[in-house]
Image 1: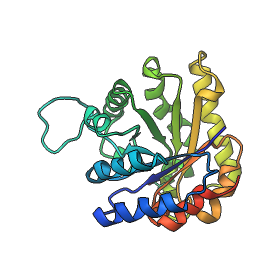
Image 2 (image 1 turned 135 degrees about the horizontal axis):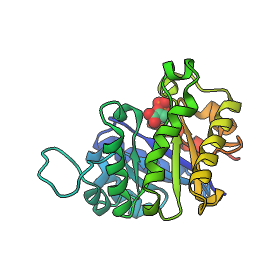
Image 3 (image 1 turned 90 degrees about the horizontal axis):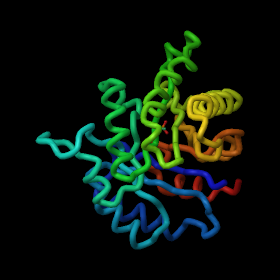
Image 4 (image 1 turned 45 degrees about the horizontal axis):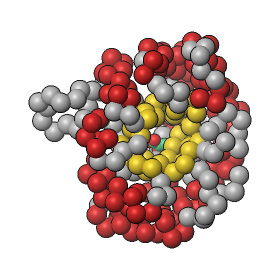
Length: 248
Ligand code: PEP
């Protein structure tokens, strides 16, 4: 099966960056790259990125979050239907840099809005350092997965989870490969156990946290890893293009 390779630009980029990025990317992406590439620019750059998406058809577009409501008077917010209208295919839901200030109920509403607007959520889960040190990784993830299970009737047989240990994000640290494989398998088996109508092929689990050109290949070849979500290294267009061109 093809892998997902996703770039989370976070709060990075300007108009020139967007143009230079996609011109370089399209010129240098190898034809045989069968992976699904998803770019998550800031809200501000989605519209411009969508022009390149339509022109080159070489990547999908995603937003980094959205408001938990649609069509209410809420100054400064962006709704799921706006994102769908502007060309988004995916939305990150519950990224740890955002999850801290929001409760599980809010995250559940966001999931619903994303699904009702026909986009695919990439639902982020993962433990922080103290949870890891106290051997709570599985129980934290089990709690976080409840939102997926509770909203399972809205899914169209495609569930994408990103396992992102909070302590690995931006730190240069990654879990042992065997741990990544184990946690991905844990996520899949929990979902299959709770949602017996699903098949394993309906669930994709991406790994995120300090992925770069040096470690991508090993991570992508690991059992139960269906892709990667990349922050810092995705800002470097040469590095990101090389990651996408890796032969697996
Ligand atoms: C992220 O924030 O989703 C992420 C994976 O960041 P980084 O690759 O920089 O660790």
